[in-house]
Length: 189
Image 1 (tube, rainbow, N blue to C red):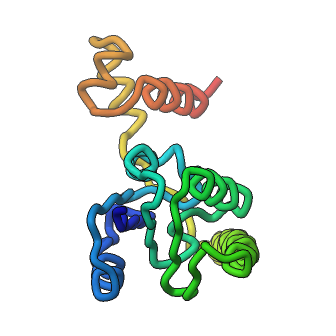
Image 2: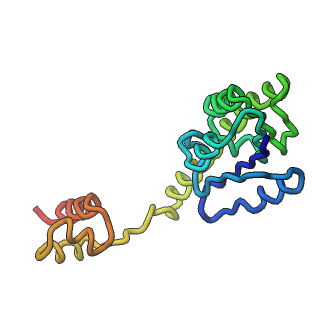
Image 3: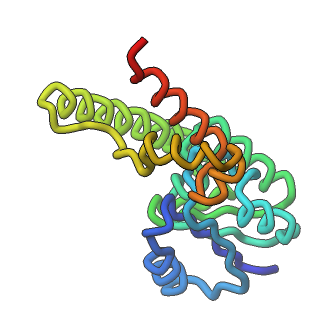
């Protein structure tokens, strides 16, 4: 019976080190799995690290993770994931909640907390949207700056195909087409 740790961070700028230290201070971890730079909104079984872990886990193993939102941000996905793992005979421990899902009370608490995590995510997105709207109204938010000039695209297109321009600039053919269209729309009729 192995003790398996799962770590997840949403961006590549973040590190799993704090999660690793927190779990290894309490548990003797036999195997670790992680997903780096993958949002909790991505379903658990669609994350490569999580999917590998599920394939590794056996009846009698224990999965430890620091928080419910490491499993996911969607309450239904978290509940389905927990059911899948429990049906396979895997015990789940969520350390920051102090929850061992071997009990019905633990499972109830995780169901409630997964819904709270989902609501938190929705509120964060609402605040972000409101902040962007305010910044736009104040003239401070202009969106992502253009990385390529439509004029430069037009010049390159005189001697190159769309695919060649895209490869030369390291952008997609869709971006080349979009910039060409924007350039044509600026031309006087």
